[in-house]
Image 1 (cartoon, rainbow, N blue to C red):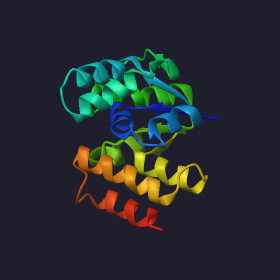
Image 2 (image 1 turned 90 degrees about the vertical axis):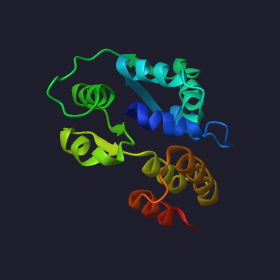
Image 3 (image 1 turned 60 degrees about the horizontal axis):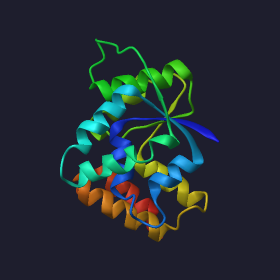
Image 4 (image 1 turned 90 degrees about the horizontal axis):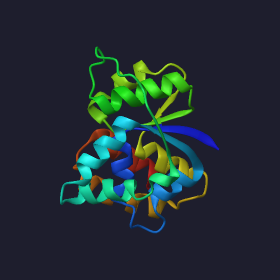
Length: 169
């Protein structure tokens, strides 16, 4: 089982489609040993307080908190991203995990460059891996991606459009 550190953005993206069958959040938690920094849990709680789709997604993640570990990390005050990404990158580097899940598309280059030996994955690459592994059909992945894209305002994002074209059967 691969180990994965998750940032708030990736977890919320998966949580948006948690009512789908199959549920991408459950697939991620079942197939990976997931750990999150404490600050990510704090960000999820803050997001869950909102009465909108993102709040419901964060609540779906928090409802499954018994399925992932939580670790404390010291933040790098000079790191030019928010506390969640800062903590996730730090935790990934400190623990040498296989994967970091992050959907901060505007900052992926900086996140990637900040990782030592950890592979950066997005929800899109995670869905593609589930398709390649036979866990999801292309059609199911596209339906999930459509739900997430609509809710997360990803329409028109070239990275998302490229992923969509790769998933298209």
